[in-house]
Image (cartoon, rainbow over all chains, first blue to last red; front, side, top):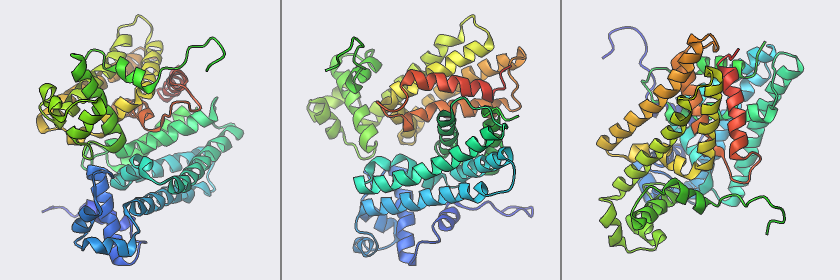
Length: 212
Length: 212
């Protein structure tokens, strides 16, 4: 019912479709999206494969054609979710900009991603303890790559004399934490849209790193 | 089996006892502590009052002597948890120190609290959506008071010319978010203890606020 020419913002369903478009076949994708929604709303342990099948409009047995178990679904969500977030950082890591501009771009993109894809990010961040030991180790490796990428960008700025950071590991931790926690508090339609949150955080992080 | 004179760090059970000592009678406290543990581990929706009673070593019927429902337990945890965190901030808000020293003390105490009492903080922060509308409104009021207290401390620094903050609401949001997210990533026995996390964050926040 919009009366101006601005396009309507994407719905939650649009965003989930966009997040998971690489998952095929379509039935596996529908099931995975249903699992993200159910886990985000009621938590992993309160969700049954039957709940997920019902939400996806499929039979309970159909889940097992594509996923060995509920834990396997969580693992795929976690693995792909972490890879998507890592991709966002990699997209700016190779830019020719100086360290400060590159760091600002990284924080802007990473914070924005956690707002826009907050439903997926919540499941990815809050259900880690439900993964099997083997799956948890794989996810931990992805998290270390994300952290190393960000730490490298901060270290480049220190080397170039652009940042002043007394505790590199601590600063990396704080930047990651700040961006990830956006998924907890962000509400669509709130005071700031994902792009504005990205801009705010890029500015705050540059200050935190003592950008010259 | 410690061989030096340093006191052993408090156990998780010690910390939960310390957090909830004001809850009486003792049976109500045991039940509330059991609920915190169960909600933190498996989530609110996956926990039954029967699980809570079993963990507390009591009969399922005993829960209802002290709490009307599982939601009432969550509300009491959330209300008292928010009040404890608010108390931590209030403890420094009236200090005679200048705005920068006061803000550092506030962040140090608030971040430290979210590490030390991470189990309680996780339940308080991640299960808000499970509260009834009426209870949610009461908790939202407590959250607004916490935010106002922190915003006031930042504003005092701006007025005194000690902080340079282009977006007061945005900076307040980031400081709160940074401290709260400690409850997600903190692990007892990890690289930094709660006091060291407090020190790190106090320094990073002062930089973020452009402290002179």
